[in-house]
Amino acid sequence: MLEHQVIDSILRALVDPTRRALVERLSRSPATVGELAAPFDMSLAAVVQHLQALEAAGIIASEKIGRVRTCRLEPGGLDALALWIEARRNPAERRLDRLAAFLKAPESPADTPSTQEDPS
Amino acid sequence: MLEHQVIDSILRALVDPTRRALVERLSRSPATVGELAAPFDMSLAAVVQHLQALEAAGIIASEKIGRVRTCRLEPGGLDALALWIEARRNPAERRLDRLAAFLKAPESPADTPSTQEDPS
DNA sequence: CGAATAGTTAAGCCATGACTTGACAATTGA
DNA sequence: TCAATTGTCAAGTCATGGCTTAACTATTCG
Image 1 (cartoon, rainbow over the protein chains, first blue to last red):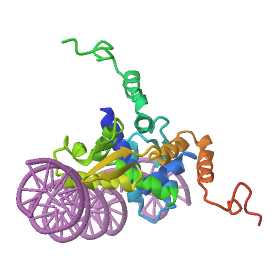
Image 2 (cartoon, each protein chain N blue to C red):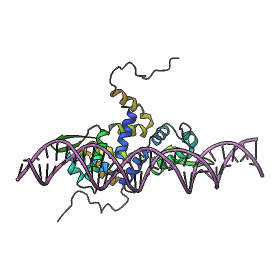
Image 3 (cartoon, rainbow over the protein chains, first blue to last red):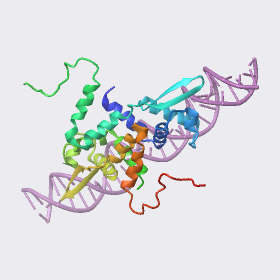
Image 4 (cartoon, rainbow over the protein chains, first blue to last red):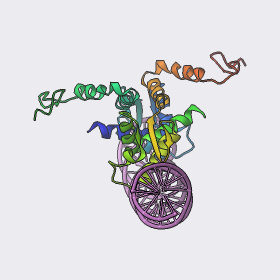
């Protein structure tokens, strides 16, 4: 998945106030779907849909034991967005993007454009 | 404006890919509306609307000289979101929220609930 | 087993947001 | 002054996203 799309899904997840509240709740401790839904004035199904969006974005993870699903915050789930922001904060630090790309490169360090280029 | 709403408007601004591209462009250097619109396959009016959303969110600023408007990135425009993310990254640092609130408190440091409470 | 619990999925409704077009305003150059 | 440039505003169209209800699955308890 391209970094660009990762950031897109994170932002689409966080733009909803209910999902932000869920993230804030989970930043304190893990919780079950029922516990997470309780404070909200909406159906359980709606909360489940929000949780699915957060999980698809890699912001939370969950495990189902028996009939109960427990959700927790995914540690590095917001890193991509934090890096994007930091890169725009000070343009001089836009190298951070390359660093991030390098750090999570899968294989073949030979095909990276790196610093030298355009030998035409 | 409450911090909660600031974060909301920042996220609503950044969730659109076109507006993110505009921010990325402006993170390199200021530019006029026409220059900003050029790379996009959409009407100038649409780009203007995007720029208004970014400015309303405090992410960019602009100044009109003659008939040309020049836009630039607003230095601290993403700070509120960056702080929110940082606070969720490590729950132990959720004190950052209080710190941020304190630093931009207008007056009357007497009405802050602070740490002690519920003397019932 | 049978009923209650906990969650999941699907379908549909409705508000919001992104884009278009067209009319308009204001500045600048010939 | 007239025309081109640069942007702005308003109204309307269309797709997307958030919520609901209803039907359904899977687990636990009596």
